[in-house]
Image 1: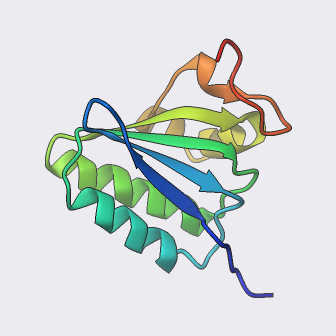
Image 2: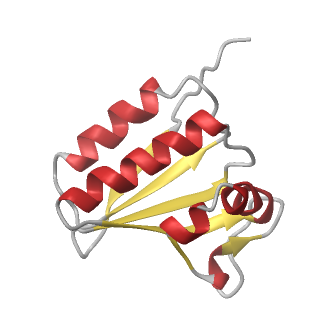
Length: 121
């Protein structure tokens, strides 16, 4: 099976100059497309990077590694990566890898299992 996606991640510039990265679908082992999109955003050196993972029900270990790479690259110039929306299942995977300690994840970021918006949003 090939890992194709139409728009795997959409980067939207926010009012504060940061970016929200909205993912569409799982993050598998074929992450070269994701790395290219991240690089385009990182070139602008945004201080705030927000990850919206409401439509991401699975992240492979390779995918988790790419998110760590994003964090480390942003950190080199003072940027911070926040998880602003995430499914419970995906957050559980991140916790197993202790990534909830690396990324800022607030309790209100947890979305419903069907990919809906976080409570209170």
